[in-house]
Structures are given as structure tokens and as C-alpha cells.
Image (cartoon, rainbow, N blue to C red; front, side, top):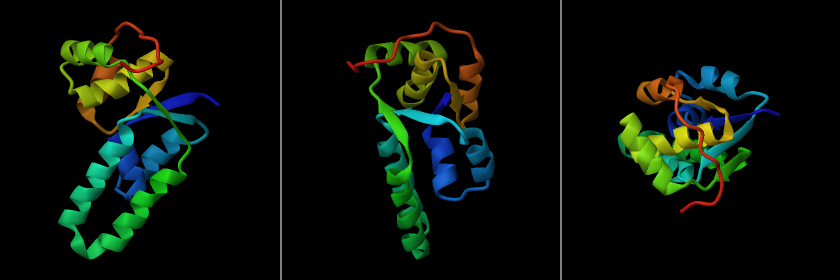
Length: 134
């Protein structure tokens, strides 16, 4: 199966049933999923924000968050020095640049709902090699 890199914005929409969930699901269907090792931290942060904002939905939010462990996502170490350089060049955060770097290194499509990250993914740039993080 072809690989797609999924970022936290897209995965959060899917897990927490946000309006874009169906679009994300269709983009990810029949693909192997990959993400940098920061993904679980970012999803946990989204979960906490939702818990604080919607205390009455605690059980549903925690249940949705638990689905993360059931998804077949390959977590890949990133090269931080390359990610920092990419973040500088692309004017992205290091977090966003990690997803972009991984997509470029795997020559894979990046699935994101973040418009600035999606624009950066459309710009031509060098292709790093995935592997051990630094």
C-alpha cells in the first residue's frame, strides 16, 4: 500500500469527529500511515484542550482519544537538524516542519488540515532521507 503522512490536525479531526473527518478518512483510506514520533504528544494536547473546553463530554473525548492506539501508524524518528533548517526556510513551526520533512523524506503525500502546512507541502524543496533522529 502507498504511504501517506498524517499530521495532528487531520488525525484529530478523524478521532474527535470534527466536520472534516469524512474528508480525512477518504484521503487516508487504503494507505499505510506514517507520522513523526511527535504525533502522540500533539494528539494528547488536542485531547486536553477539548477536555478543558467541553467538560460535559469527558467520556466521549477520552474514548475518542483511546482510538489513537488502535490505528496502524508507523512512527518515524526525524532528523531534528534538518527539520529546524526546513522550518527556517519554510517559515513553519518545528512541529509542522517535522510532518513536512517526513513527507518529503518518504516521498509521500501529506494529509493535513493546516492551510499553511499544506501550502508549504506544495512548494518544491529538497528531499531528505528518513532514518534515525538526531
